[in-house]
Length: 423
Image 1 (cartoon, rainbow, N blue to C red):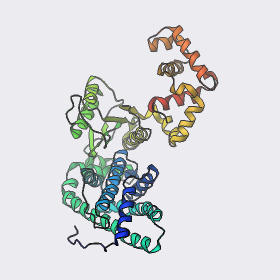
Image 2: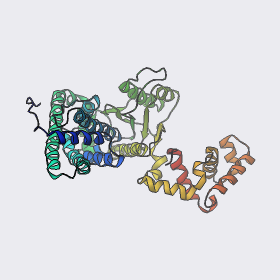
Image 3: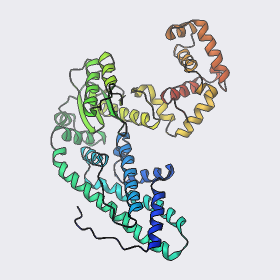
Image 4: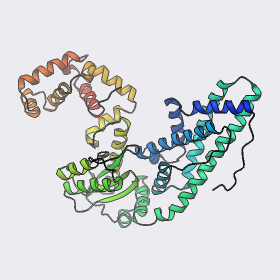
């Protein structure tokens, strides 16, 4: 870590006040500016698999905002002075998770790529502060040095943390398994026998993969208000699924402080009292389940299914606790662009999208029961005439009758089910 504390060039009184004024504005950037900052940060990780992991991308966003506000707040109180890094719990945890994924301190290049986005934000602010060319030159010179020095100091401090932890984090079973899994996921030439030996898990037969995770920014607490033991909660939920599915063993990798990757050697994943109890005790934990797969390729594909499902849940901000890929495959395709997804819902459901949920439930059940009103009534535990009245009301709310637009209506209903809080 830096041992020097050389001061930055002294600012003139007028530019010092400009720096303070600009820092106040930088303290609260717009959503668009933050989005550009986050995008630049993710580009610096040099890992597609990392950049699309919702738990890590959310952690990176949190750390981004913390760094920006730390720099701005320091320059409000002491404009132009060297900003001392403050390594937050989130920043340290993110660094440790990068090591768990097999990345080293080079992953901290994300801080460098974020610097260019932060600099563009700061220049916009500076050019709006003054038209005096000399003052602007002085402000830009010192602030450029301030930003780069702050990020250099931060990266160096985090590198020390990573180096101190790297031996502990990379020795042992989890790291060996993660390295092997990386080879499998990337399609590297590795035989089934080699993979089984390293994973200590048989890859013959059928497997189903799960991702068990929690929102890294959530205020986790149990039902009685006590702080939630995140690692313990994730393990408890994973094991509850193992028990409910009748598996005698499971392969588990710690993907990060907020996430587990799990495989069960079963033909189907079941839920039951054990799963219900485990999820009730862990109110922020969600589970994504891949399709059944056979052998080494099925092992790989099921995990990719589960991670795609996790990304979908994060992307649409769904609060659904258990989500299966087979149930949301079409929704995943339709919600790559959320604005267009909302337009699709509006075009096909109209007022039904925000109407009483029982109307949407009636339409969904009616389609599942192949347009049989009696079976729909049995599914919904209601009277046949009630079902017919609800279907009539739903038809009046939609731009086109259900019978003329079954496929699109069904898909739109699934989007609403998973993403009830439409924009």
